[in-house]
Length: 169
Image (cartoon, rainbow, N blue to C red; front, top):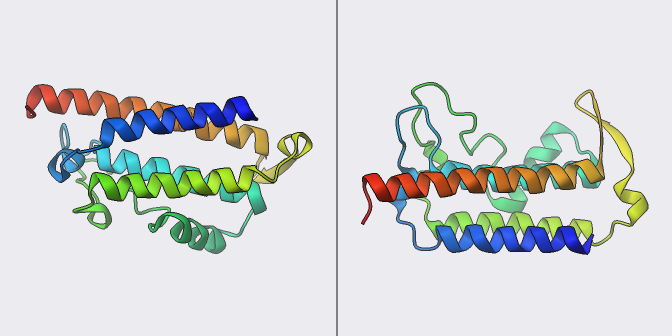
């Protein structure tokens, strides 16, 4: 578990360093209508981590899950705007959020992850349960959250590079 915790920490640090100092315009910029913004991806990373660790911890009802996610990161499950509808723009719920706002969301989700995972034994990781008609496990959830974080961090890096090439200094 310590190796996984180290991976979680290094990936978090790398993402937050990249995002630090981004202006609101960059966070809300789209390559074209219907494409994700950096801000959406950052919110989505936080939503997903809070969502899945809450599922792993107690398999709450849908209503309880929505409340748990909001209490952890300050926005709801649908507020990240992902998936973006065709022709869609940056979601109103995220309008005007700063790099610090997104960093706080992600840090809050990560604090929840660490607090939840501290109580798990190796046997707890292997516990299997049904979620939304699929069999899953705590171990799968942890691996999925890390892979998800890395995937979307890569998208943030790509959008950041494109923004700098096209519009930035």
